[in-house]
Amino acid sequence: MNTKKLDWITDWLIGLGIEETSAMYLKLVILLFIIFIVTYIANIIVKKIIIRSIRLVIKKTKNVWDDALVENKVFISFSHIVPPIIFFLTTPYIFEDFSGSIPYILRLVNAYISIVLIIVVLNFLNTLKYYSEKTKLFKDNPLDSYFQLAKIGIYITGGIIILSFLLNKSPLYFFSALGAMTVVLLLIFKDTIMGFVASIQLSANNMVQVGDWVSMPKYDADGDIIEINLTTIKIQNWDKTITTIPTHAFISDSFKNWRGMSESGGRRIKRSLNIKISSIKFCTSEMLERFKNFQLIKDYIEKQNNKIEEYNKVNKIDKNYLINGRHLTNIGLFRVYAEAYVKNNPNINLNLTCMVRQLLPTEKGLPIEIYTFSNRQDWVVYESVMSDMFDHLIAAVPEFELEVFQNPTGTDFKNF
Image (tube, rainbow, N blue to C red; front, side):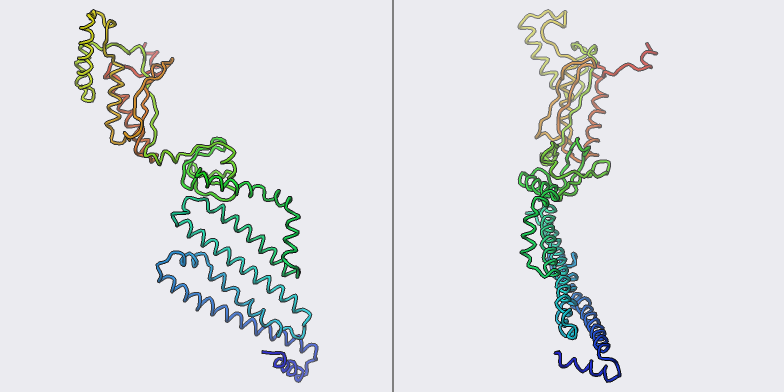
């Protein structure tokens, strides 16, 4: 196609009796209509035939990354570059009679091509992020933060390139102006910069990951992290509400990460039974004979009783008074029983600390604390394990002639 071959259109229109100036404009309309048809057909060929063929080939491959390219519409977005390229190549011929407008039209076309390429690059970044999240090496890293920063850089660079085309100035001109606006940009992107620095620190120190259970009382947040991006971290609380916290807050403020519990293979149980102090007493021989029927402490009672008998005999202890010498107590035997019961529970992780201890007596009685770890970490199952354990222990307290302390109620005063 050249200018000489297009002169016949003008001559033909003039031959039809159309004025020369009007013939020039009518020729432009005809050529624009032809280019519109050509670009429309080219667009259909690319999308309906070429892109569809590429998709069929990709579906037959076993690779994941090429599926991600299709999923993120990389090929579709790239196909939009065909019409402006055709228009770019034909502009000098279409507007040959209006040569003064050609530079401005080419600027607009170049700007449009730049926009298409920016969209392609952004979609490719989404593909790269998707593939990285599936890779074990990057699975626990805050990829959202890095890719958001990369997108900001692409937006800024793309915007400068588009302006350079529209205003016919070198991109260096805008980059130099950008340098002069550094202070203003620092203020505008303060949260973004702080978030990016915080993301690097969180990643480098492995402080949080997607899926971690964290507690942050300052923000009333307690739940699982579902998203980490450049400026915020989203936490889904146990009531299914979502709390959004600035990323830099995880560096400046304190929070609790429960990941260590998950990795340890146990979830702590730390709960007390308050025993009424007035029910604590030495065990008589009758009591010991009855307690020997409790299988979990039968051997312990026989072994300890033999030791105590030998001690009292050697030291010539007056057995008429239980306070003399050594004797087993009902609270002591209950503590041993509780520990044996806990350790015989299949849902307890015996590789971690497991003990039953006395705490400081208070006005609410003597606390007997069970301190152990459940090997079932799921919240519902964990609560069930703990409840079953204390159901049994509370029911077992009266068997040792002990009482669980509770504040008096109206019924207690009525019965009194």
